[in-house]
Length: 515
Image (cartoon, rainbow, N blue to C red; front, side):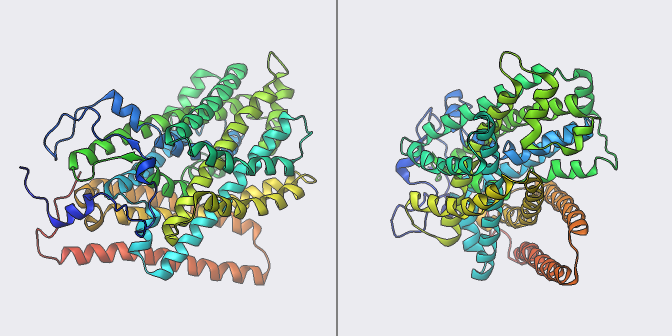
């Protein structure tokens, strides 16, 4: 018989309750993909089973859904602008920003697997009620901002593919209906839904790879751009944009819930570690693919528009037309190839946004609403302002550029409210047990978080210094900034306070730390 585990670990590794009166969970037991018992040959509860390709296949899915946020229309617009203005010089930054994003997402997956709860649920349990509601509002605002960009991106693609017959507002309506398609697909099981996303990612890959082949970027310059760091004062804003749009606040919440779609025996430490290993592999593969797709977009526009007059005016709306004018028709006009890739990016990201909204609302508020109702509420919050924007934008193209700048600022503001709670929670032995992160990973993670927050802080200062004018507006922004800073300090101080309190406890109170 294996030695008895400490009380904390038994509580942490216990299977989640199935009582309907218990708190909301990410997935019901009958919705999960069955993994327990597959190639189950190890008798030792603490031993990690040997690698299995069959199990890797069963665990593959959540990482690819997570990777959609790295490929949404906001990221694609950042890619094309970075390529057009900075050429190949920021490819190294795109690679390292993706690596930083991978680290954050792996921590999110670690939290979900080790605890059996997702980030929004744990925030509700760990923070006072007032702080929980503030975090919820911030997460919802971030989600709405991302959803507006994604819906508009899809609507632009639909307008292009219809040769302008379908106006932007109608494209928004069409895209809004995808949440019901998502609910329909979900009824057929998690794996069917993941297969649809695999098709959408493949569509993006083929479309942008086709464009890459059509434009024939310089291979040597591409390789040098990846390997040699280069940054100038003229490209600093694009550099900030590349890093800033990689970490999506709602995606941090989403991944911690997605990993719970697999049935794992939480009573065995080896099974939990096995799940972490497989999720790490599939998430890494997914983000490598997303990096390659982003690389295609950046290099296509670097080749086509770097150093040209159009470089500073290019965006999602006119990018396809500019490509068409430069490279002409062909077997399939490059304008439509661009639109197909953009549509796949927009549709996939809006569906995952709806998915994230369900987990965020259910976790923070402990709501046991039917999925269709939560999806409808989440969708409505974004569609109403998006419709207004679409109607205005149909008469003024400059409106979208202004909107995107404000939405990027909105996303940047929310980043600390996802990163700081995540890092505090994965560092707490009381929450994670033996799966808490070790000192080295903890330091690296906080450095990455600090870097991302500082970079986005620069973006905020740069934006407000050029946009904010007038005494009243300045006063409002200053008051908001003070409250914002105070809440960030509060979140950090809670993590520090816990660490100090734990150091004063008698030894052997907790299990051994993990790596």
